Length: 286
Image (cartoon, rainbow, N blue to C red; front, side, top):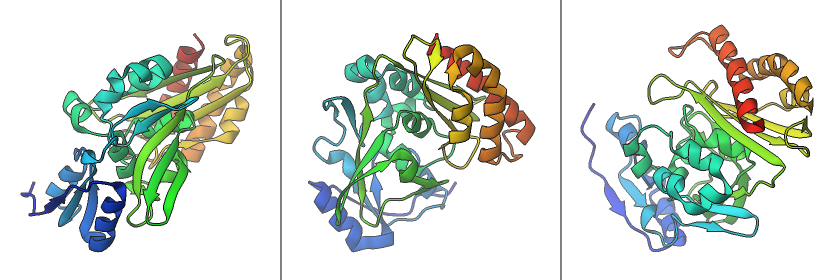
């Protein structure tokens, strides 16, 4: 590990000023929030910036608020703050539970939800769950504000779809109705998960019938993804869905294009998918 190269830190007073600095310095500048992944990548020489724009100082950038049917999570909110938020625990306890298991306490205390999503590290928890919950990313840039579904924000491994000088400002998560049941499960040996799987199930009769379902998988593939074909197989009565879990898991595995790597072979990952899809659905429905 090499020493960090010298860099300057700017602390803007607004998102407009932050975007202006990013535009002025171009490829030499990057947004800096928690820095848990960015600084490590810079130390390893994978990224090089001479200017970091500290967005943690922006007013309200870490706020977690209620907005008429939605919970709005500021991009600067740390994993620990989200985990401990009374609003999140009341309205979206599945997010609080997921955040309580992100990496380690040091990362949770310093790392931010915005940094996590923008860095798009494949072995990450939040994006997978937020995709199943149909969360929306709100951005600000020279061309104005935009709203992006999470699956559009993350464009690939370590890649996002933000435009030059555009900043992720917050994440808006619909507050689930009583008929929507959700769960997030994962498998990991150390701090980096091998698999993350989230389900959000629409059920009009307390779990007896599945009228709609969203399944998102992460970590097994370069970026989180859903499968409409797999979700279709899981509709119907709970008994029908339980019988279809194996087939749905195979569809998910096929579309994820599983590879043999240091986390295991493709067949092993296919097995994990089936096991954890069953666990996630049981956890949500029970």
